[in-house]
Length: 371
Image 1 (cartoon, one colour):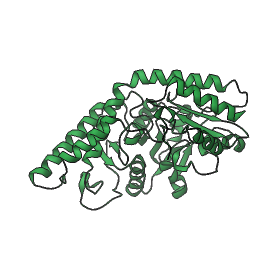
Image 2: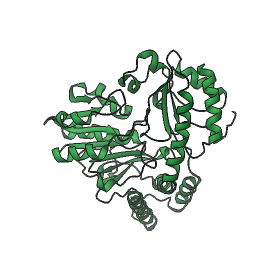
Image 3: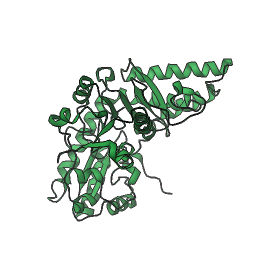
Image 4: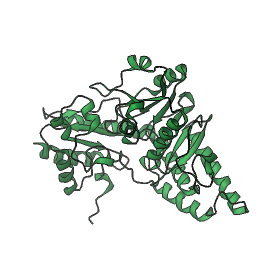
């Protein structure tokens, strides 16, 4: 298989290349703390001690001091465990789900349609904040929304939304998969109930993720040995957590400079694409700086992705979970795009390896394909 330079990889929102420090930490901790943290011998206790110290270090980096961290295998699992566990604990409650959430939350609208209300987004991808409080009726027991939309990169004002939920005593789940490591976060100032994340989105190894939580009024999805306060059975992934700690440290250290750099690259792409009158930009200036969604009416997004791949560039049509499907992206349709426009959607997401030169190369090929 041909190997292309990381500078031609524009699918960071799907999965970021692991930081070298993340891989190094994974290997070192795997070698040093191989014992089961639940074992009562000295090596097991050392592994448990390392696991708890890594948890504290991860939470400290996000300034989250008044809750707990439940380690999961992915952000999807973390979202699922909250929704499934909450509905078991509150069988008479209802969920209020934002229209632009990831499919690991949106699935509940199909699985539990009688227990779900939806809060729509407008043509700019924003939630109607002025209507939010009135939608929090007495029957709503859990609100589910994304901090930043995985399709468009649009950021929602979670401080304002969580303050409203806190005031109305409604639990709230925030999907932070696209924001952890990419946006400055002081989570102790945000009164969420649950906050989920995925390690490989910010340079950790695969199959790592987690749930930051302030109450445990939900049931476990995985039963067995009683690990993690009986909320997730299974031997704890100490090395995986160490990888996330290292990746988060690296991401935060470069965060501000990287945000400015990616914003400049994104503005450059938008200015070039806007010279073509039929290109529709789905992202906004205040969203995730490294993520750009555009729709090209009359073109097929999957075919554009394939053509760019043949030229050595990796982009996507949207969420990697359904990138091989021919259906128009659900979230782009929710913004008011018609089916013809939505089918022509591609998502370009950037990270540390992308350069001015690689962006210019991508734009030259993409604009030729569009023409």
